[in-house]
Image 1 (cartoon, rainbow, N blue to C red):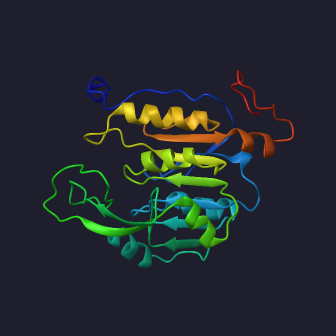
Image 2: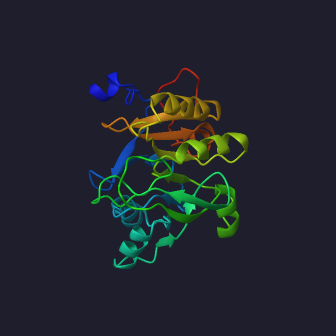
Length: 242
């Protein structure tokens, strides 16, 4: 409630209803619209940290190959020390609205590993420079004509990526996004702007986490093309997709 009054939190209800399944543990899990995933889904998971329970659940439950991305040295070391299935493919760079390098600031807490574009707080540790690529570049390099499920937990870079998506025609079928309006200097107004941009792109909200930071979106084209046989058509006033 204090964060809400300070303008660092807000409440948003899902716009549509569909069958969801929560995959992963309480910390790193996400809800997905399971009826709108094709059999050979192309999955991109941006932001690894030290929790890949969601990625492993997708592999174990559906047999998907998960392309995971994280440029943070600590995350890369952690992943390389794990025993992982071949379907988990790590790419040692991050996602941005451009190709190049960015400055990542270390977290304020020493026991956290995820770095951010935003200066979250003074940590006493120097920033690092890491490689990043745009979504269109990544898809071209990996040979993927589409993305069926895209997860973004990219510590504040999601706002620029969404703006970049709006400028082009690329529309991943499902978007899972953690927004970082709690960070100093961000605020809920920026997240509200991002939500409006996604809505203008044809996305509708199907899931909101109890924390009010993790959001699941389904694109209207995915709703029509991959809906269950008994499903209803996408409608501007309908809250139900099944």
